[in-house]
Every structure is written in structure tokens, then in C-alpha cells.
Image (cartoon, rainbow, N blue to C red; front, side, top):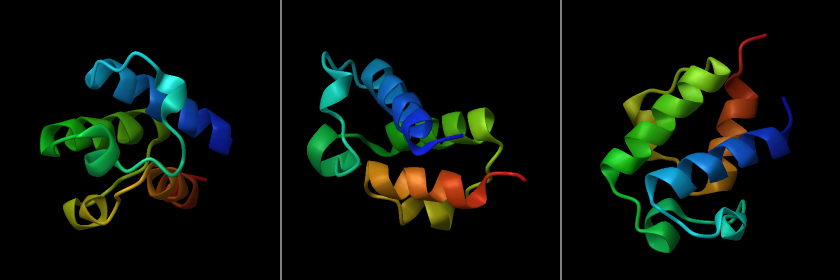
Length: 82
């Protein structure tokens, strides 16, 4: 799994969930709440998607510390099953 694959999954999920017209506008520097106006439910479903797709487990405390797409990608890459 590459960084680009995780970014693509996050883009697709957020574009669908938040009804965005341009998923390519989502970059690693994008803030979920500030830039996309994502709420707690949106972020919860993103965490579920990452867990389902990549087999990572994220506690509520860990999820609360993730504010950007970069942080989400870093978490997935650091916690993926071997």
C-alpha cells in the first residue's frame, strides 16, 4: 500500500460523504473540519472506512488527534497489519 493509494481512498470517501465536486482539491494539507466542514459523524465514517479497507484499528482518542489528511495517511501507514 502506498501513500497515494491511501490518499485516493480518503479523497473518494470524502467526496462521496461530503458531496464534493472536486476530490482532487483534497490534498495532504487539507483539514477535515476547517477546510471541508466535516462533522463528527463524517470523521467517524472515515475512520470506519480506513479500518475496513486497511485493517487498522483506531481508538477514539487517536481519531480525535487526527485533523488533516496527512495525519490520517501517516496513521494508516504506521499501523497497517504486517
